[in-house]
Length: 464
Image 1: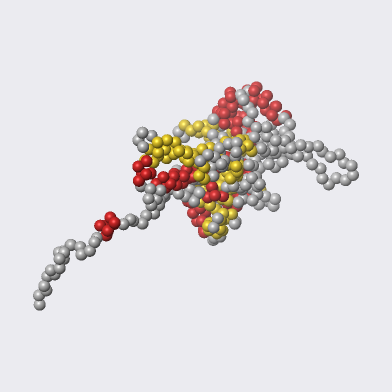
Image 2: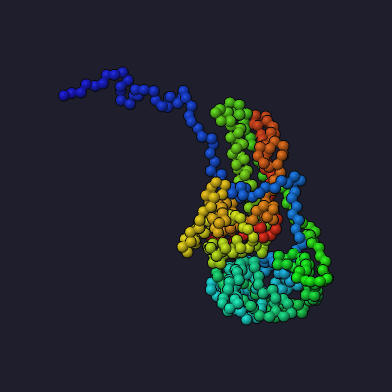
């Protein structure tokens, strides 16, 4: 049986029998999404910070007077395998903070001896003669003896920290703790004999030490603030102490910072291609998203007001071993009352999860702003991809107490500015140039302030 060929018009092979979809699209429109942007993150920091109105463009933080004796970090100069201390950096040691004689500092810097320790080696033992130690690289664990003779951890020292300050006093005594290298360490040591030899040769150093050690330091509370004299538990007509609350003479002031850009849109695009979506509005929306991302980055990393650089040195701690363990998180949140939020890079949060899982610990979740987030001890652990990760694979974890009423961390902005489209952000028309480009100046004004030092803490050198 033979099959007759199809003689229907238009039935030739490859010839369509109906209108193609490609042709049909010429008579209709497509369903479109607004422009998408991969760079938009959760921006939890901007969400959780209480924002304080800063009408004058500057926010002043008044605090009680604190008698700071110095607890800074020492920096070094590296020449190949040799590491030397920068003489001026010795002023970060409390007892040498006010020494202005550069020659004496230079003589002391030359007397430091460089020593290398492998992981697990003992740097100093309890009962050894005290000598001034500067940690140039690595981590050192401090341990002491508890009330009942057991070994207790006293924290970790890392690059830039120092120990053994009492070596610079007339009666240095002995070490009351043991220092053990957790990683490969480079330590610069100044024996007591070398210090005394320099002091004997330098009249300026001897005079400074005599004045410093004889100086009467006002009584302080545990926070370093001038003590408020009070009386309690007395009876009868006891003489009551007089007192007053002293303030800092030069309080810290935070000026509003700015992030800006100029948005350009061709007038032909704005005139002819505004349906179904307004091109100018979409351009502005994505530009504002980018500015908000930059705002959060600056609030974390800016050297003037960024949280990573404004944490008090006493509120910076290091991990005990490298990865972020539950012990490290507990120590971080215990350093302040009412820790409300933890912020970490997503990779650090993953590392925290691995450490918890290895110990059989499974932290619960909590709800924040309608979103389920991880938590530690009930404190939300929020992702923030603006916290940097170093080339060595280390990062930081932030712990905050927020709000002006809690003496915490706050965001600063000014609202009601001209042409405002969001709080503290405005869009101002600039001009139309001879190329028919319409220009808009998009600006956002912001800053962040730490009201008291213990409002913000940082867990540093977190290995991920």
